[in-house]
Image (cartoon, rainbow, N blue to C red; front, side):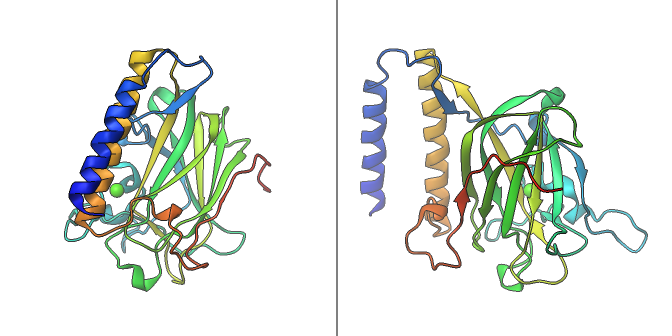
Length: 258
Ligand SMILES: [Ca+2]
């Protein structure tokens, strides 16, 4: 599709969306919020984690510390933030020994979450096999030590693009992210960024319209990036992937084995 055709399609979509705002939806309908509540600038914070690389004195290495997954800085093409390469664990995950971190949101409040976007891209190239692959998401409504309920199990592609994973809205005070594997490195596992989005009630027509426009803006930015870096728009939905690249998108509610 040419850029002009795609732009025309977006404009038509916007027109349809505006004209179909219509009556207010039922109060139990939800939309995905546009604010990344995991972002440190929005009050997100890491409350615990398994490991990150340290220097000879045992101090965290700024470029690879765990806080880099919520700093909003991402490695893209030649844009490589000098102080933030992503998170690198101190060791590679092993069967039964995942690497992990736990997120809390602003003021430690419980949020209704429905979307997580994971960016595997770090300063290391994908060819050395350190980027995150299989992961699981758990939520706790009580303490940062659990009890945990699994809400998502998935697989990232070894490609330089953020990847979106949705699940039914779930109350979440603490989010635990388990990284079960990288691609083949026996040294580290790495992740560039995590974004978390809320499910928002859309009972009010104007609120719903604002949310739709914010989502459209997000989609337009993704479209721009996909053109700029020659990346697929929604890579996890691509039908051209090889079987080993195809992400899993199972959703379960079974408690994790501990
Ligand atoms: Ca980052």
